[in-house]
Amino acid sequence: MARDPDTIQREIEQARDALASTLDQLGTKASPKRLVDGARSSARTTLASPKVKYPLIGVAALIFLLILRKIFS
Image: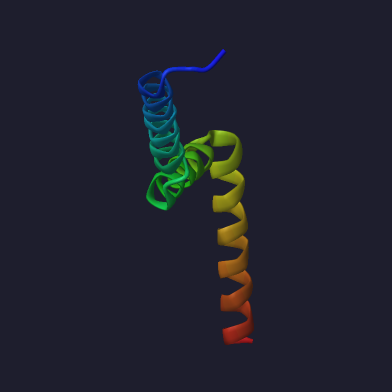
């Protein structure tokens, strides 16, 4: 059974529109700016956690004291 050329054309246009929409969504999700912003936000949240924040402060203070000791000895 042969299909009507107009029907085939409409199906092709619908498929093209669906593909364009999918590509737009993928482009938005894979945007480098969006990925960087997400990573930056995640890092800030992690560093703001007391379980991470206070040990980092302690390590930084220890390194600072070791540098001062090296300079003045």
